[in-house]
Image (cartoon, rainbow, N blue to C red; front, side):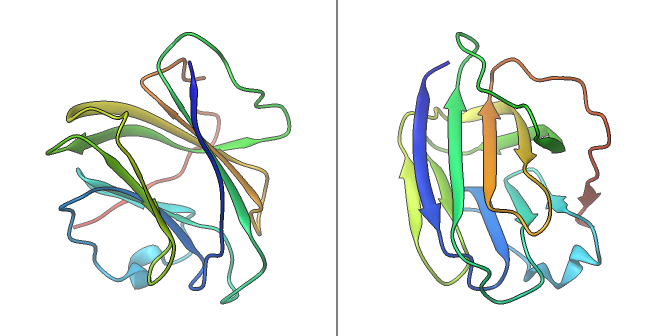
Length: 142
């Protein structure tokens, strides 16, 4: 699976978001201690309690060909994400964003791994080999 992103984000409000370009995000007050909240078109990962702990490295892999190194990372999400048009946004609220044009529209299987909490390293796998969740915790939006 080719790596399509290796980028550092400064999560001003402690979240990193993967979303459809047209997704409407509810403000992440709904996290209530959960590491991830997700709906059909967005996934929000809570990376720190503080406004800024420093940069978070975000690696994104697309497809089944290659497996990234996941040693010492814990899985925090495994589930679907639907894009209404080509391109996945990776961003932190009110700040830096990257549009990944390589991700086609339609349904995708996504797994997210992190190096602990507070988080300094996220690995996102889209439509690739996804290890069975060990303790993935997701709070769906209502």
